[in-house]
Amino acid sequence: MPTLHSVTITSVSRSWTRGTTRRSSVLPQEDTLHSMQNTALIAPKHVTRHGYPVFPQLLVSSKALLTADGSYVPDLTYPYDAIFDDVHTRFIAQDNLFDDTANVWTPFLSSGVNYYFTWSGLNEPRMEQIEYRIDKLVYPMNSIRLEEGTSLVSSFNSNMDDASSFMIAIAGLVNSTERATLLRVGDVMGTSISIEIDEFFVIRNQYGSATVKTTVHPAKMIPFYMVLINDPTKTELNIATGNSRISRATIPNQDSTRSLELFVGESLSGTKTLDMNLFELTFFPYAYGGPMSADEIIKAMSDVYGNAT
Image 1 (cartoon, one colour):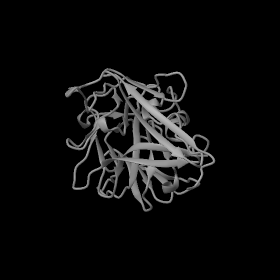
Image 2: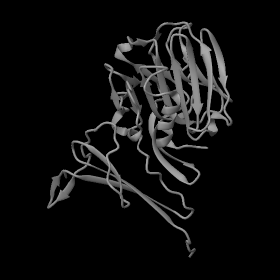
Image 3: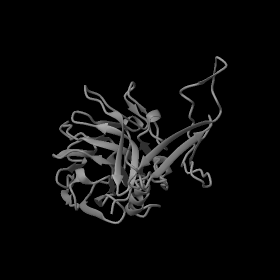
Image 4: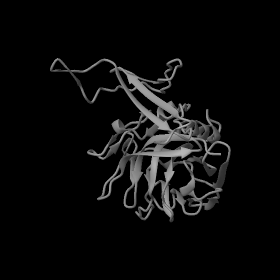
């Protein structure tokens, strides 16, 4: 029988009551509340005592990782721990927010009216638990899996919303090795913004296009972070796999407002070739000069999903 000379045990737990969520490490340290917003959770299963179903007031779930190479799960592995200022709408990959029966992905928090994503077609996005590593850090993460033939389509205020200045942040893993549309803003030719991936990232609008060159192929960015910034004078794309190296490109813009119809994984012609695991999509109602810059947003996401250097 082999002998382990070095063993690392990491255990992360969550405990909650029926009214609020709490999160803590079972290792000795103070229990702290990190969530941006309290979320009501009801136990999906009961326990049986003396032959009768009982719903306890306190529930605890725990996951343990045992490794022989020193790998461990970082403390910040829950998406709602990320701290954002003045967020309008934030979508994160959670089972209780993703309804594959009604075909609706509802936001974790939102200031809008009827903000959600939906989908249709034979191929549908699905929840998928994945695991990736950055050095010796192991990240178990919920994600929404988009494959060829699938896409997410927004329904913000019954598709009647528009804005002149905004930012859209995305975190995830790209699996596509060929050209695909990652994100499109707007559904009318000549007024939309599109972000495509190939060997690099490409941003386009009716006034021009630019390539954001990264040091590695998008499919090798584990994970990748994207912040799209739009205001009435320019459109900017920021791409990173950590907070130390951020690549950017800017193209001109002359539109005072743009439609907030968002399409994840679908081109203007309806082509759906994107393959990715989506962790979150967050919308900010401001561009430059707001509470957070693109660099600060990428830093907040990398604190949760990992900071590759």
